Length: 227
Ligand code: SAM
Image (cartoon, rainbow, N blue to C red; front, side):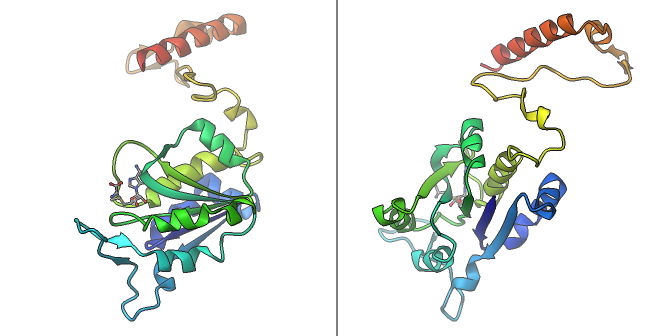
């Protein structure tokens, strides 16, 4: 999978080189490129924002600069993800759907967000005909200072679903959110006693039928507790 992310703070996205994702990139499973939006600004001050039409607080990111940055990245069969708290809420089914994509492009906003004509422009029929899809995505009902953290959340959730990225593919077969309302059972490891708290006896029994039943009950209890 190819991933491009456009931001005014490229360093914010440096952790994407670490851990599983770093390994996935060195193995050629994922190719991530970070682009500095400011390098596409053409005025002397390299400005990426301006005052909002209609007045109001804050600054809005300029459509021209975003257009210059995105045009070379938006090729046929691309999903453009515009990060905004006003977008569709990100969840595991969305992660699964993005994990089947060929190419994801993330637009990380700052200030009051990106001039809405950027979304309108790449949503036009000429782009749809080339399998270019625009998604406005939120990672939750709260407001962050910028889209970089949101992009990292989505990239991490999506890329771990790509075959070969996780060392043990079984890890994603039965985990929280694999189906609506499903949460995984609690996990324990050695030692069997820690600060006076024992591991549930059944897990030490070696009786896999009973362990499966216990885990199913615990998973149900967790799901009900969180409703
Ligand atoms: N004025 C915007 C509003 O009220 O909807 C909020 C802008 S926010 C301060 C700046 C940028 O942070 C947004 O353009 C977006 O890229 C990012 N952002 C903030 N909260 C987010 C969220 N919950 N999910 C995804 N991106 C978010």
